[in-house]
Structures are given as C-alpha cells and as structure tokens.
Length: 568
Image (cartoon, rainbow, N blue to C red; front, side, top):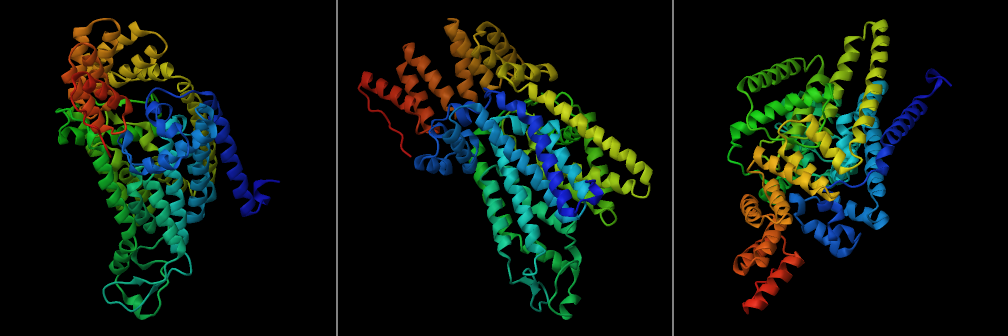
C-alpha cells in the first residue's frame, strides 16, 4: 500500500514504527558498551545507595541527597530501579537510556504533528532529534539518564498542556475589565504541572519549560492576542489583547513557582561545585556564553570533533566574542521582526536561546565551557526553525521541494552515519578520552580523565605524564592535582605527592574523597592531628562516609581524644 492510500492514522503509525526501528538499530551497539570512569562511579557503580536497588531508605536518600551536586531524586530512583532489575550489568542501564530516547523521539513527533498538523515536517524534526550525533552523549552515557528522563517528562508536560488549552473544558469566563479568569481547569492542566515537577526532579535544566509554553501559545497554538479563545460573551470580545496575554502568564503561575523553587534548590546544592578560579569573572563567563551559543549552532549544522569534555579556555579573543555577539543580535533581530509572518522562526530561535540559559555558564558549575548533552532539548528549536523555514521557502516550487526532500534524506543518512561513528568512542573509557584529547586543545580535564582511564588498565606511568600535563595546563584544576598526588604516592615520591594533595584539598575543600585520601596519607606518615582535620572535613561534606568515621575513631582511640561523630 502506497503512502497516498494510507489513512492519516495509519501513516502516523508507520512513521512512528520507522522512527523507533531506526533509532533502536542505530544505537544498538551501545548495549555492548561498559560503564565509563567519568561520573558513572558516582551515579551507579560506586554509589552504595544506588547499587542496593529500590529500598525505602534509598528512596528517602534520593529525596534528601545533594550527591553529585544535584537534587534529582527521580534520576536516582531510576538508577536504583536499573540496579534492581539488571544489577551492575551495563547493558540493562544502556537499554533503559535507549528506550527513553526512543520514547522521546515518538513523543516529539506526535506533539509537533498534533500542534501543527504538519506530518512530514514533524517526522523530519523527530528524525533529526533521534539520530543527530550531538545527542549520542545523552543516550550512550549511563550517567546522563537525567537528560533522557527529564526530556520524557518535558514532552509529556507539553502534550498535556496542549490538550488542556484546546479542550472544550478550558474556557475564559466572567466579565472582567482588567483580566480574565480561567474558572474551569482541565485535569490535563494539573497533569501537565505534575509532569513538569517530575521533569524538575529528573534534571533542573528543564526550568525553562514555562517560557517554552508561552512560546507555544504564540505559535502554533495561536493563543496570543485573543486568537483561539472561547469567549463567553460578546462584551468579553472587547477586551484588549494585552488582557489575554497577561492571562497566558497568569495561568502559568504554578509552573513559574516550581521553576523558582527548583532554581533555589539547585543553587543551594551546587554551591560547592561552582568553579572557583579567579579568572572566571562575570565578563569572562559572559564571553564564554556568547562563544558557546555560536559553537553550539555550528555543531548542530556541522557536528565534527565532538568531545565529552570541552575545558574552559584561558581566554577568548575580543574579536571572536564581538563577532559572536553581533551574529546573535543580528539573528535575533531578524527572527523577531519576522514573528508575524513566520512565527516559527521566532519560536524556534527563542526556544534554542532560552532553553540553553541554565547551562550556558553564566553561573559556572564544573570545568566544561560547553557540553554536547546540553543541546538535547535546545536543538529542537533550531530543527523546527530550519525545517519549517525550508518548507516555506520552497512551498511554491514543487520541483525544488523534491530536491529538498532528497537533500533531507541525505542529511538524515549523514546523521545516522555520524552517530554510528560517534558511538564507537563510547566502547571504553580509554577510547572515549583519547578521542576527546585528540579533537580538543589544552584539554586539562580530558587529559586527567584519560590518565585515570589508563591507570585503570595498569598504565600508571603513562597516566602520571598525563596528570602532570593537566596540572601544567591548569594548576587550579583540583582533580588533576589530586590524581597527580596519588600517582606520585604510588611511585614513592612522598614529598611531592603531599604538595599536590594539599593543593587539591585547598582548591576543593568540600570534596569528601580528596579530604579522606589526604587524611589517610597524613595518618600513615605521622601527622594524626592534621589527618583528623581532613577526616572531619570529609564527614562534613558526606555525613554517611563510613570509612572516614572509622578512621577518625581509630585516631581518637590512639590519642584518647573524643571523636566528633557526624549526624544528619
């Protein structure tokens, strides 16, 4: 049966099947990959609460923990469920990531098709989302469950919201001079709010969703300036458009309240992870944000030299920053000025810019200047902008539309090929970080991670050289100082090792592992008083750090001094 003879529902089902089948096939090699040494030990393999599976104490811990400098209880619980089902076999954990990614792809397609009625454009955007190599990091990395899980709730939130505001039960009633009151709330509205809360409890980056709902009110829902409102009386039709626009904001107050709460919690738990280098002034972070926006756009259109870590540079040239700022301002002006004629340009562009704000680095957390995983949801805005734009550009030229369809097929084939290649780097930690070092420059974080990967397979000497090089590039990077110190300890260079460990704990005073290991070193080399200080610091950051408490108890027993037990 040809596509022309299929009913609309049958064609939608066929497209869903094709999207799911290709996505599962393309990503299937990751089921044979192992865990990686970057974050996976903190999230899964070395986390006692997660490894224990689904337990009541574990669930309580998930909602009260700020481990990994994040509050995302549903992400923790999903990892616990994986361990309950699959133990520490990585295939099961990877499979769940892949299933979430596939579900997100189908939800995106159905969402766009419902909102716009554009079947093939919606399918093409969903295919780009599913197979773009920038998204490999979010899917193939077990620790990035928070990406695919939060996106799942993001899609459900928008679907429920769209159904709610187009439902017959959703009406503007009452005669108001200054505002309109929504008195009949659809249960789907509250379900959307629930899914949004779940998204925030999976990854706080989804805090921008209320703003995206406002964009969707503009296009494609057409609710701005009184359009598509079911008004109760003719007198209400005389209300000014601004009245309705204010109502669009008012109905989202519960969503904004959750956003504010999530921002507050996130800032509190990430305080210890904020990058403390004095070089990262606000002006420097702003420059990096501008450059990152342009770099993200370039990687969406030409996804080359993708890496797990893009370390913060020591400087950005003024000319480059000025050009980036000018380009962003120019594009923003063009798309906003075309809002009335081509609303999808404005919506797609602001979707991209806005959803990246939480991760753009104005408040810097970690060492990354940018990250591929941060494009998982923002890239959808660019995909919409381009696909709808090309369609309208060629709308009156059927022959060119056929050429565009062929070109689109080539683009999707290229995405599949690039994604397949990018997946190969995730087979093991040494391969992953060797590739990262090869495609980036002066990447101290990647060199440090490659050193740890090599050390894990017995190449300690090679690891030491990488640690030393990472320290040379960025002396203020605490992990490199720490890893170099531990490597020197292994090789018997005690004095030099002590110097680097001391620098590491000074740079990262809230890191319990660093504090514990340095305390252990001091305890073994005749400095129990100073060792106790570091054991106490480890317990202050992680009250359930059993090994640190045991070492503190041993020191106290030797010196007959009372140990300060940590309680929570």
